[in-house]
Amino acid sequence: MAAVIDKVAWIHIAGGKVLSTRSRGKDTYYLPGGKREPGESDPDTLVREIGEELTAAIAPDSAALLGVFEAQAHGHPDGVVVRMTCYTAAYEGRLEASSEIEEVVWLTYGDRHRTSPVDRIVFDHLHAAGLLR
Image 1: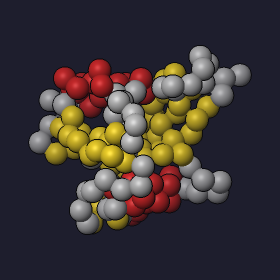
Image 2: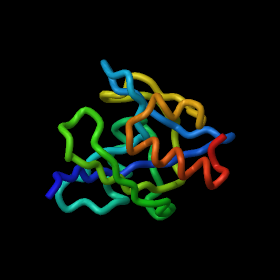
Image 3: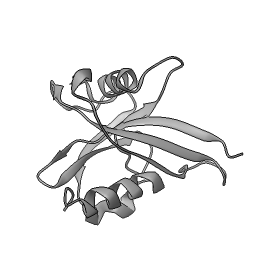
Image 4: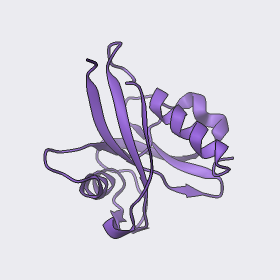
């Protein structure tokens, strides 16, 4: 059985672009979010991770499931899969890089090649739905 990395991600789209982040020392962009802590619900993980990474406060009651996506985990041995549960949600505050995040960017479908394998699947989904230009 393959090892699975359980992640929760925030999908925030504006003007046909999706919010993405790049960690210090990395050259790949990732949708904001992260690994669930033991006992955390999806909204709890979303609130904690986005607060840590982007200094913004997610409104947990506004979280809406966008989908669950799986792919080979970027930077891990073959057979390690990331399962990313993606949500849209309202937020308050400014979106600013914090903690390990070095850069916050808005990406289009043309930037798909700059992201991790699971993010590329999400980009395909958003593009097919007419949400990502």
